[in-house]
Image 1 (cartoon, rainbow over the protein chains, first blue to last red):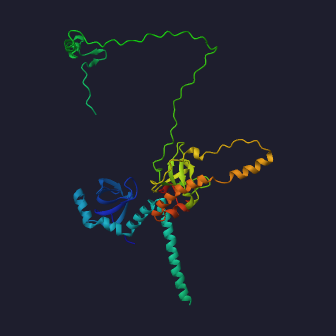
Image 2: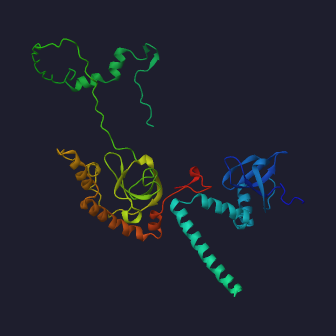
Image 3: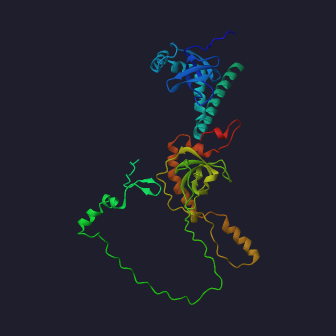
Length: 134
Length: 229
């Protein structure tokens, strides 16, 4: 029941609305009750409403409003990208992106692979059923 | 951008220029041109004007003035192909008896229609013409560099004009039935020739033949506007 992900300096968040949709950003300062100053290696530091941010479990060790170089170094040290891509949330997003970019031919190959896999599973199941029945 | 050219005689206010007539004469160096030419300004030799041809008055005047129709110099070009449709692309046909079939695009004919083949052995689509608007271009490409399609044009696909024969009515139906059904052997050979090379290219890519043999359809939950072809 208690909250585990807090808005704090160094909290990594995912942007869920607007033109930076889908980016991972670091909260670098809190402006007021509703807004945070947010920064990322590939964007200009800017303000963002908390409503546009989804907090993640990842936190990095920085001081209030660090210089870009310091921020980038801290993100590398904490391996934000690696942690994100290993986390289940991050993996889900990667899979979603891959599925959305599938070609018509890719979708056909996927369908064939699913059918084959289902066939193999069904065969194994039939074997097991036979064993328990006998 | 090239720097703006300096005007020798800027307009100070509308109608009033900076430099006077005699000063401009000096500025333009007309005195130097004259000096080079021995006191006179160089003149082009007069071009001989052809003697004016005497036009005879016409013998006939029409009773009413007829309006001449405007000249039309337009030449029709074949339709512009979408960027996704290039020779060798796999296309999905959307209408007609082959709707949903995935087909290989060979070339654009002069009428603008696309020349397309199944290949016939793979999905039953023969060498056929198809309109670009009824087709989805996928991003799957097949190598058709070895295929020779130069002999196919719109006349090849046009309806054969039969010479009118005078016959009795009862004989008419029987004879017609016999003529229409079979496809001439020449066309079958053309199909085989084109498909032979194509099939080799298809077999090089795994699953491509099965892909072309299957029809495209929308399944539950698929959003066409989000599909990447």
